[in-house]
Image 1 (tube, rainbow, N blue to C red):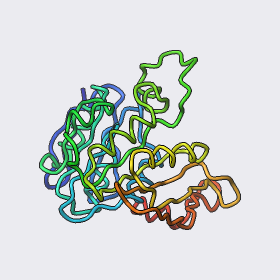
Image 2 (tube, rainbow, N blue to C red):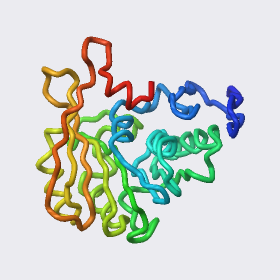
Image 3 (tube, one colour):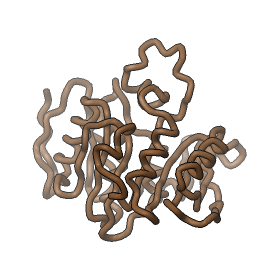
Amino acid sequence: MEKIQGERAGQVSIELKENERIDDLQRNGYRIIQNRDKFCFGMDAVLLSGFAQVRPGERVIDLGTGTGIIPILLEAKYEGEHYTGLEIQDEMAEMAARSVRLNGLEEKIQIVRGDICKSRELFGLAVFDVVTCNPPYMNDAHGLKNPQLPKAIARHEVLCTLEDVVREGAGILKPGGRFFMVHRPHRLIEIISMLVKYKLEPKRMKMVHPFADKDANMVLIEAVRGGKSMIKVEPPLVVYRDIGVYTDEIYEVYGY
């Protein structure tokens, strides 16, 4: 193990395990622990944190939090009362909790080890103002060599389905609470149908394109529990203006 000393007020010394590293999040001096052999957060999680909105005093939960990136970024940007990250994989949950300690955020962020499919049992009904989720995108897990590997669990619907995420998210949201999710455009009809089924009315949608002349490869969606039927389709977000060069909007999201 390698011992890493915190560099800013509130940060503490943290033990790094084999193949782990610490990355700078470019927000409030916050850093995060990642393991290159398991699963590192991607742009989709960062874009979701930029799309989601938290009001002062609100309670937020991130379903399937992985490294804990979304609660940490949201805490850096907003004055929410408390942030929870739910993660089923022991190693990932433990690593995320160490990132919380690294940044001295134990009073603001809690990492809970648990199953998304049992969120209502774990937390109760109508307890959160905001739910965020960057769920597994692929609904065909057949043929995976090892479906229990962290990367497979993060990318494929091995342990939870889209319906599980929406059902449980709706259950733990307060009436009028907001549900934010990033997913793939090819499942958009299924996504909207599932949201409506569980009384989460889609209110905002933004397509994400790798380049201006390429098809969208991500979609960001906000839905409101018990909201009226009306959706705003926001201008698309383009990631790259040239190969290896982000657009200004992406730099803004990343905080550069």
